[in-house]
Image 1 (cartoon, one colour):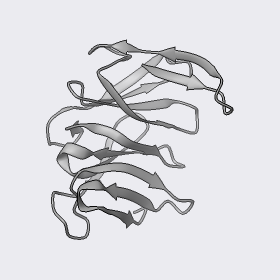
Image 2: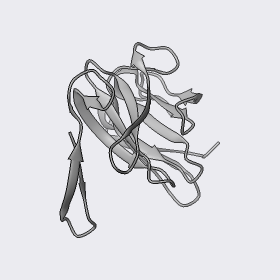
Image 3: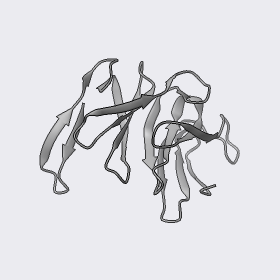
Length: 151
């Protein structure tokens, strides 16, 4: 279930239920909002997908499935963030990589693999952007934060 609150913490509404269907979640993790107030929810576990909802919780779309190919995930979305162009970055924890999509879920690029060197990850869990578009990734298993250029 996803819950919506005002900026001062007053409960507004909630949406979603447990399940595999559209607008349902097994393990909702990270949440991000784009410039049109669409909400993206990383749903890990059996669903291994990203769901897109409007600001009222109405289902708009989804992408992803279980696996290691492009647009596939193993436990995605603990870290998910939208940039100023509404591209969506997803920390694909189980595949030790970051995947980038457009607002409709079309694959753009990916980077990272299991390891401890620069650009490698071991359980990337959180992701953030700064005002210049640099991508900050919490590389939990390697006890560090890595920074990447927007390109």
